[in-house]
Length: 360
Image 1: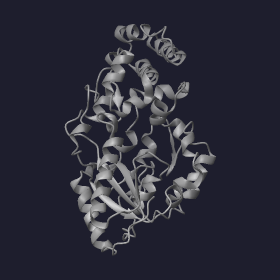
Image 2: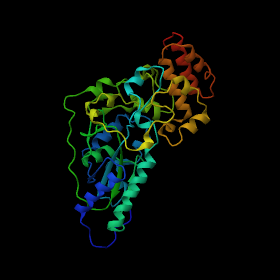
Image 3: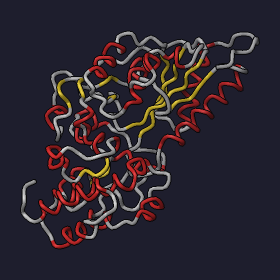
Image 4: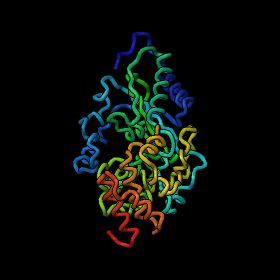
């Protein structure tokens, strides 16, 4: 991180106000500023890792304490500017309606349109350029899921929301359907007050989880989470978790859908988050028929590509196994029964047994 230049120090309180205004002009729903202290969160992270609740996400443990110590990740960091961006596009098909349609594939609402990573990182870079225009050279680094960052804890400390019992950040005025990004900086900006928690005695998110991945308040076993199973896991999905997955083929939103605070959720203002290829409720048989070339072409610039074509077929095969018995579902599965991937063949065989009345 380069050091700041030697020009007279700016009015940092005024600069902080300007930063929040510029962030809004760049399309962020909110910005806040925190220090780098995460001492209360570090033990929680270590316990989570010690219990192997991160599963195959080895990157969660790869960087030692840098995740909970921003100044070790980026030397010279004194403050973190956290931003959020709403992602629910207006006019999409009702989530509960898609989940109730067992012949449709459910894609997590955040992944229906453009991948947010480059979009948000580009806007954080533009925010940094506006700051540079005022203060001259200063040290900074923009992050959007691109490094070991405890983004939810930093956002909480910056006043953007509290971490709910499902471990998702909740904003009192906007629910939880938003992305987070950070700008690490060496500027001594005034910090915002941390957000206070407002979950109270509510436990709807814990009770609704299809695979019982939320072990208790603030305790998530990622190895059971449908988002992990459909995106991060690269091999076979444990058999006991396949039926509870229902028709969820990329991610899961149940814990957010039942959260009372999401009655305040705001529509996205970014048009690129609108659904592509009718993925807010497309039929499973249609999606399962995509060739690898179609998958790559249709998911270009989308988060869905993270699962890979093999994972895509694996996930949809499970959903077809959970779908109502039909000739169309059986025919679609049979067409993939000899797929080159052993993982795909395994899940197709499981689904076919379900379609034919077996109970694997």
